[in-house]
Picture 1 (tube, rainbow, N blue to C red):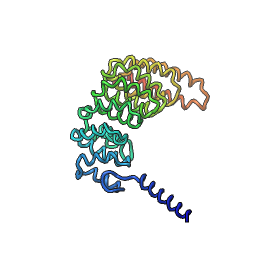
Picture 2 (picture 1 turned 180 degrees about the vertical axis):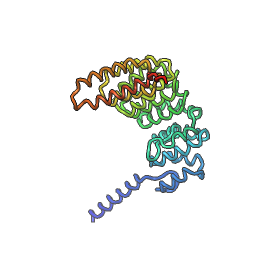
Picture 3 (picture 1 turned 45 degrees about the vertical axis):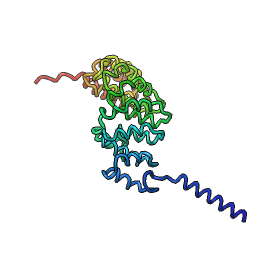
Picture 4 (picture 1 turned 90 degrees about the horizontal axis):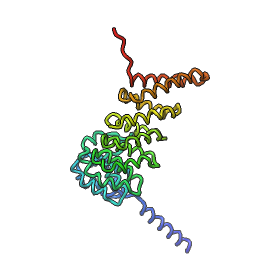
Length: 314
């Protein structure tokens, strides 16, 4: 009997624990169908306040859809978004930051983000910049990354916080580095000029492809519109000679190709590298020749893009 009583007690305890950890969907009835929630968030039947309550939902999919639902309301949603940014719940905070920047889309990163940002413009989102800047020191990495992405949609309102943001391009986590570089790119020049050389060195040293591509975009903006283009291009030129024949060197060259004639200051370095590869081709074993020939072909393409050859007269 004692054993049966013990088993019954343990079963009751486990049942109680299961009930305690079973996810409940606030607001509304427990275990509300997620797809039904998403459908209603996409419509107009709920008030803004009711939509914002789903920032507390256990499902990241629902929280994302709630963010999109508020973002498409633009300025009208700002009081509720600001309230979310002041929350103690990291999930709610991140939903609030996503409502300013555009959350990840279903089936691909950023699907629908441009359309939403056409509504939640920088002059609207920028009002939250001071709060977002404080969140850069939050103890949750997910919140810090969300704050950076939101700041990237704040335009010039993010300028006072650039010094802090630049330090985050050296963060241990590559996605934080990528998000920080996105802010700097979208703030634009001349406000970001004072960070141009440091950020270009960060671009050269970045060891991961995804953030390196984001940093490449930032570098292009620094050259096109900034007052430190000569210094930026000199750093790229110096790096070309040191970089191995790999995809990272390709990204440096691709950046110069995209700049075209704006990259003329780096042309001597490209020509020098081309001569070096041509000499290497002459000495290379048969197994390496194809790789070097492809490298030479791309270097010629970059050179001619920077300094287009004169067309023959007819």
